[in-house]
Length: 204
Image (cartoon, rainbow, N blue to C red):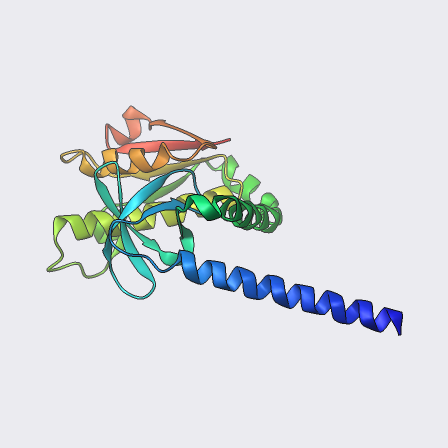
């Protein structure tokens, strides 16, 4: 009988915790333009500049607007800051635990040199007609961040992003994003191979 009561009590506690986290998550994801937000999976913060749809918003970081999933952001609120940190740590720990398996595959890739990701828009999208320059840059940065996070999870040692020369807008924007990661070092890739059109990222 005592065991049954304990089991019921533990079940209620788990349900209560889940409901509490669900309520907290709903509160933090109710974004409005002007809200300060923190990134769950990387270091740094920004300000919501536009609501794109039910799952995405634009976040202004150092003068640049980047698209983010609402699930990857938390609203900054001093009253619940400790709870945000708790949730963030658990999300990051789960990602690290899930990234241990691909270690052997990553080693094979390292022998062949770092993986190359071409960010030129025709390599990212089949059809980009009618898109503005800012929309194109946002698509390129979204692709860049997805590939960088994949490299981190797969424990790749290095990865090269080919962004071209142009006016340097894309290069500056991705280096601004990279500066918010505390586990990477970035620098100009081999000049003899890429000229000034690529950035190499070393993952610690």
